[in-house]
Picture 1 (cartoon, rainbow, N blue to C red):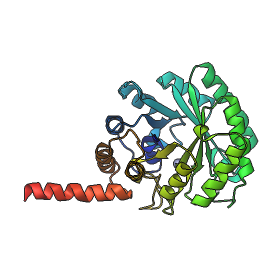
Picture 2 (tube, rainbow, N blue to C red):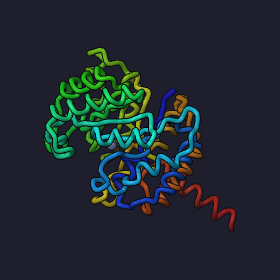
Picture 3 (tube, helix red, strand yellow):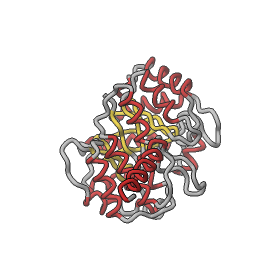
Picture 4 (cartoon, helix red, strand yellow):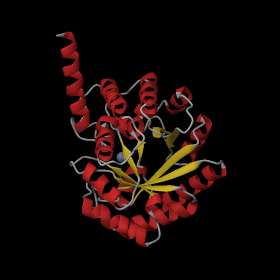
Length: 305
Ligand code: ZN
């Protein structure tokens, strides 16, 4: 069994140029739930002026259907974000920092040391409140500023986040630089240090077309949670057509075809992808998504012919 951790409402929308109405986000999330997705990162509790696309975080969470077994996650950058997350009622939060000093500084304007200390405090407070915490480490597989990122950085940060009380570490290929050999090397280093596959998720971006290959490399080493975005939503608002997160449909299709259950209904997920496309107003890049769009168009024209 593999679990899909769906990030389209947060990582996807935050990197789309369109500002999507709250009702449409809630509808997308409802479709993901109906497809069987159980972990959905629905928003980010950052300051509204940083990411206007996600400024409706508290209102959105209030609109979401309460469904047994469904976990809505909110991204929190700091203590202020955590307070807003608590106020919204989410019980699952994800926090983040980068494995690369330069990327971290550019992203959150803090040194790694400052970020780690801040995040340890966020995790401690969240755990005191009974929340479950996921720790993202971004740019694990390469940094746009520094190039190679030492695996020792990732290991040191992962150990600190887990020790602070994070339940799982998500290894982020933020700019889509990873390859399968590197995924194996990083995972094996973590496993050798006692961080088992059940404490790890992979968060791949398909910027250079390697996301699915990287996911499969992780699967073969025992990782069982993967982040994805319907239709491959995301990318970069300044680069039209750029690929975003690993496309959820591509992962579900491939794993199910290999006989690995995901708990997700592929047709319903693919329909959610079509809805997502209509919401962001651009053609999304996921491969299964494109196949599905074509198949649906053909069945409509067959019906109307
Ligand atoms: Zn991402």
